[in-house]
Length: 169
Length: 358
Image (cartoon, rainbow over the protein chains, first blue to last red):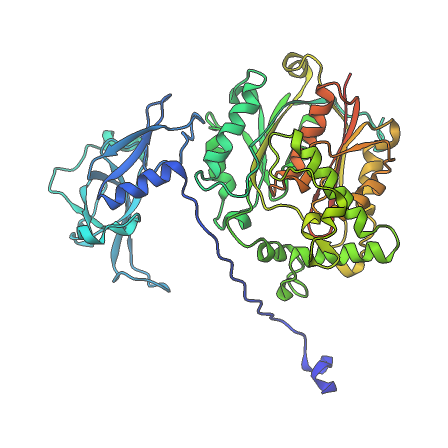
């Protein structure tokens, strides 16, 4: 076995050291409001008492003012696409058939956009300002998770004026 | 004058706050846990976030299992308009050092330092193994208690301590913690009773191990006019240094702490009498090593707060030592104190901060 350790075999260039860590997640008071809302097919946000902005989901504080957001606000099921991208590149673990559209959605009444999947529209028709609505899973499939939202689709309203969402790009 | 060769700019510990240390905070996320601490550290001296020029935090994503948690934690402060900010993947005591260095340059007069850590969300025995050398040590997954036990065994074999010494330190710490409203483990049990415990990893019994703690802490540093305005009797940092040793455990003499001794020398610990020492020794036997490296006699009161054996919020336990030591001076119980913070396995990295009243 001596030759197994000699330098004639060349340098060791790669070493695999598998690492896996498991964690429990504590969403906190504010995010729990958001997650419980999803189970009821509602988007729940929170309002800052200083600047009045509504965050969805809220992490419990206003990142501008540094104060707790304590007022729960139920938001609309509809919103505006502020920006988007069309995904054409396959990647490991992809669960949706490409091409598909990923967009930032500003819900009516919110001051923070979040990312969502857009369906029921051709990829060459997607645009900023498009009005969309959430499509929820069946009532008995609703859980405290964003998987309760199947996707967003055009809601048929005229496009939103750029002035109404330019602050959120 | 410190051993570094020049007198540092006077910087004061203007305010200190810490969360109630608990085994597990089930309700709140990191931001929600931090917000009351930030509010308290400002509220203590009647200031707002607009009164500090620099923010520095200490935390690690390995405890939370999510990326960039320190960025999200800034939501607890509210950094608008934008301001200078930094972060260290270390205990908040090391973040305090960075802020102190910036204050030495003289361009700013106040800084907020905070730290947070949830030790309860993952398995610390695995998480802490990942701070070891990634090629030869981490793949073996040595848990931190076993490494500490090797150090304790070496200490006993060198004739520097006994298991009874460990129990005495644990008994004193948990008894002193009865007077600390933020402590997690506080009880009055004799050392003899503690010695009846089974070993967790020989020669360490449960009492010699730190509790698992969720917590957070914050300090406001001030210099110049703000130091005088925010404190009637300022507590000054008069010496500050940190040093580190090899990460190869086999290359170190685990029974001594030359990095602590060097930092203590540069910080000028021996330049005057020390009344109180807050030592960040998560394992009971490590207090013996650090005490010797700091050159402290038996007349020094050690860890009147109960120390890390009473609450060990990872990433905050070192910063809390500085806050607790400053509190003893502010209350008049001590005139000159030393605070110590550590990071890494078996006291690998050590920080020493000398504090003085007027």
